[in-house]
Length: 123
Image (cartoon, rainbow, N blue to C red; front, side, top):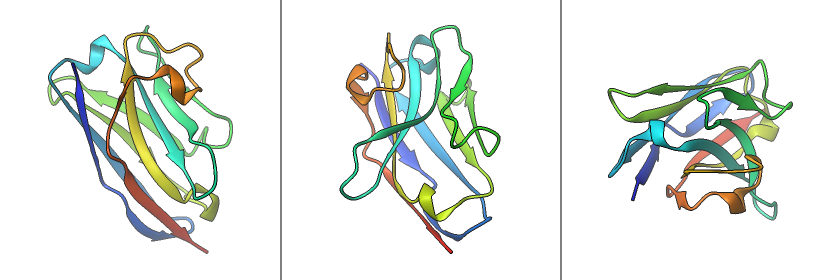
């Protein structure tokens, strides 16, 4: 059973960057679909990026070209590099994992979650 801990959130101005980390323990991240989600107050949790079962990176259109998901297998950690941040990127960012997640965009398809890390982007 994998456990996930996110870190790296913070407050930045629009146009700034942050790198989020998701440190895993209890199992190897390469065995899982690994996804990043975010949630704003009053909004449903939405997908941001993920590694699919083949290890390919996939993104929602709103972040493609600005966010990059990556993985360091030696550190058993998944990252989300976020550049050119916009106020609408504000929210709590969560790391999620499951052995299969189809469709990858739906939060209900992931069994394991971290506690989340807050990202605030001011204009």
